[in-house]
Amino acid sequence: MSIEIIKQETGRFDRRFGIGPAVWPCFDLLWIHPGAVRLRIGHRHRATDLKAPSGILIFPNTAFEGRALGDGADASVTHFHGGPFCAEMPPDEWLICTQHEDALALQAMVNLSMIYARRGEEPEVRHRLLEAILDGFRAPVQGGGPAGRLDRLWAEAAGKLENMRSLADVAALAGLSESGLRALHRAEYAGSAGRHLQALRLDAAERMLATTGMSVREIAKSVGYAHPESFSAAFKRSRNRTPLAYRKLCQRLA
Image 1 (cartoon, rainbow, N blue to C red):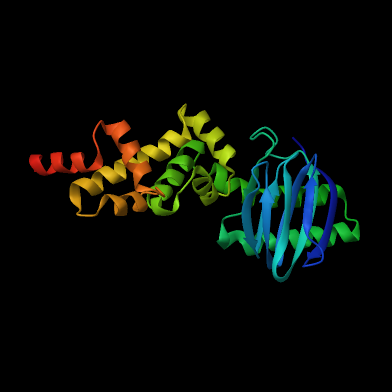
Image 2 (cartoon, one colour; image 1 turned 120 degrees about the vertical axis):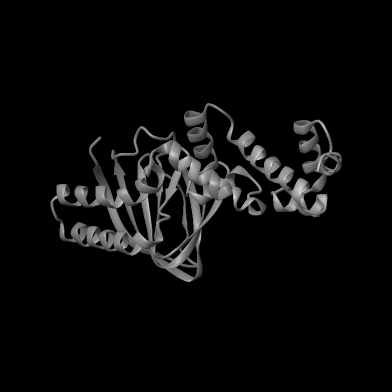
């Protein structure tokens, strides 16, 4: 679907002027230039920090609000309809530009787009430039195909299980919302993302029980459980024995 730019403007957020609260019926591309901001996005008010140079693409009908971190932040915003993301995700979603090596180049295009807007350049010129900017958001989501991209995301999460306390933490690795991750995982693998995360945790815990002398508490923490009791209960439901019983079985078989 072709892009229709509604409005482009620049501004500054500081202690006096916050971000929102707002809900737009269109896409909202917010780019942070100098400075940093903290946003709360979606019906769950997921907190997301953006530090220049970086941007966020907020989908239509998604509530958001925020404030500047530190002394303030310069920002630009582009409201638009259409574009390559229209049919990909439902409302209450957003994407963060996570490819840091491309961020400065994308920011240069954002700056150029704002200059063209002030000069009243033909809309078609700004539309083509916006499409190129949106490629910076599209690439981390589409690169290598959705399934390959999810495989890489889960592989990264598996290496950081201690910090993956929830699906929201996994989703944040790719600049997605939790509901966006659930939808993508369900579409590609016809299963629950939550159960997949639990399987990663328990598989890792099983290896640690069999090959290390770590305590149950230490293992629970290292695979992302806040409480060892929750880990032990989940392990027993899945393996039909407690973590210590599983460790003893491995020792007998060794």
